[in-house]
Length: 273
Image 1: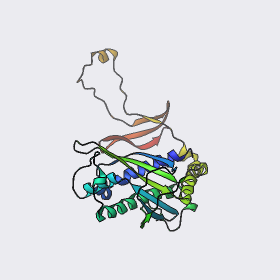
Image 2: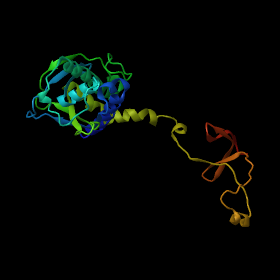
Image 3: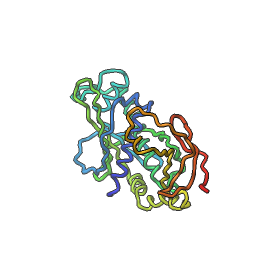
Image 4: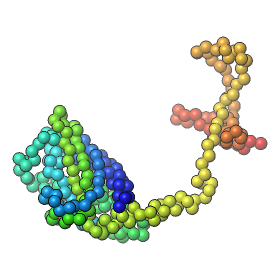
């Protein structure tokens, strides 16, 4: 379980990127992901509304704080900015709000399922799940409050673009069934890390060994007196010949000096005779 923060960090980056996509920015606006944390329900949590999404490898339950949902709704339809002091209990529930909750749940649960799938070794990936970074097409069903002991991923989000009103801070949560939680842990296992490193370790040494080459573009001998007489703005005439390329202090190559898109480059390498 000590590796769960690794998955949380990966998911945080995935969610942040997903919310910045042009399509999703129509919903999330200036919201940002502040934290992602794993925990287990102890049965004393307040009742919340949950939606259930069937993933290829298990079920994901999703719950979104209503104040966040209302802020997204207002942004989506060009209404007022987010307001952290808004009393969401005073706002009537609408069918539009219900539909938006499903859309957001599909977006976010798809991102979570994609992260779980990406971490699994390739033989363990489900055949009916594309491994091309696309989100899964989930169908939402009303869900019940998860039982005590269920693993929960809590995501804290905030919107500080409130037009002078208090910033809005809220959260949404995912509940994972046993199958998905097993997949999360399997994707984080040390054996999985070894599998990731294996292709790199088996590559030829010449493709893995890095060396630092130093190029000397120009050298010029001047008299010491002339050096002391130099002032800012003086021009030193030089002739540009082939550059010497050194590994540490060993001269290995000569190279032609050229310009490419505003950068000085070395090309046409030749062995030193």
